[in-house]
Image 1 (tube, rainbow, N blue to C red):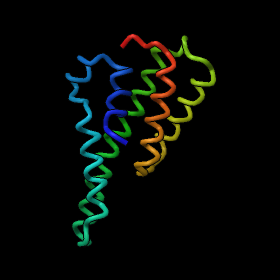
Image 2: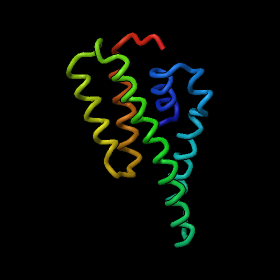
Image 3: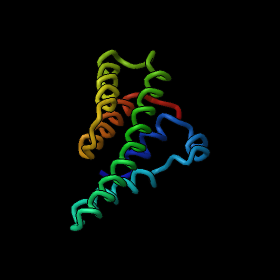
Length: 124
């Protein structure tokens, strides 16, 4: 997945000025993507542990921002959303609460959240 999906989700929920003030942008996702790509290419055990730590650290940052964006989106727009969509988003929040470091699962959550929020004409 490209970092655009991540950035699109955050921009859909938050005003761009808020994101810029907090330093939240696609660079965070891109850093995680780069560290994930580097995991396969490392041969040394110490380097692999350092790379794994770097990936997990950046993954947690991205995962937490995605979770918070979904929560804030639900809070702001729950009265205009269908119950089925609220259930989907609640399930995604619960999944993000688990201790996982699977990039493909996180990417799927981001894509699904975008598809849910895209159904509504959010003004942000």
